[in-house]
Length: 359
Image 1 (cartoon, helix red, strand yellow):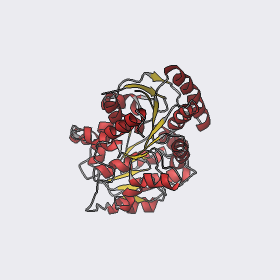
Image 2: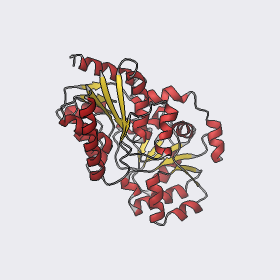
Image 3: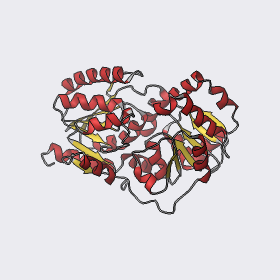
Image 4: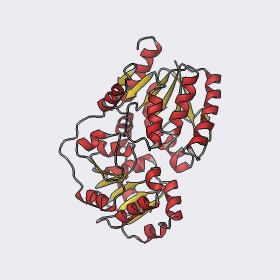
């Protein structure tokens, strides 16, 4: 079986790490990097650390508006798929890369397999929500991480090709977590285990809005313990544009750092007293490691983390962010709602059955 796998952003690299390893044991995989995340700290280092094979193609699309970025990828991917004639196209998550690859394959009548199918925030103002809904509705195989994702698809009338496989990010976390040495990473930033918060902010709804980003900076600057903030390039640019960079530099509680590789991220997350984020994937990673999460959004596609008490939705409200981080609640129960850490093998099994005519 020949599979073209398309990735382009940091969370997709993490998801692909386990699937590539399982898929290449028995099949021919062609790995395509769209170049949506392109600098070393957001791209190359993840391939190196996670042992992902070098991409067979790099489209080098770079950053840009949604329409331009998606359109450029769509054209390039169509040409590539016509040339390589895969049996299936494998896409991940909810980025513009996901949408472009899904549309290119579907229009060429090549089956699409969507990893993380069925997730819904029910907020259509988020570009990611549009991407995931559209890709789900052109996919032949919908590879769901949770029962809630399966139920979301059924509610939309999508019942064929739906498979509950578990979460591939758990596979990657389990595979690498034991080899991570947190001590030198924490020493680099002058923090102690359970003595700091770890933070990331990158969603357009927060980073492109001066009022919301200002509220987040205000909350971080008033924390009762240090906030190690791995600042996304887009967010760093906007901090400067909005005149907030001086506030960040002056705040004694904020330790502003560049985006960090996967191993360092795991080290900082596992040892944090809380995660402060607007990321989707990191909400789950916090749950994997038993770290309370404060999500700076009004909704989440990872509803299980909220229902089980490990995640608090606070939007971009400074007082709510501060209160949730200060409480640092750790519930007693942390059930295995994201599977058993073998989602990659389950995905390959589903692909094989489909290719063999058993759906």
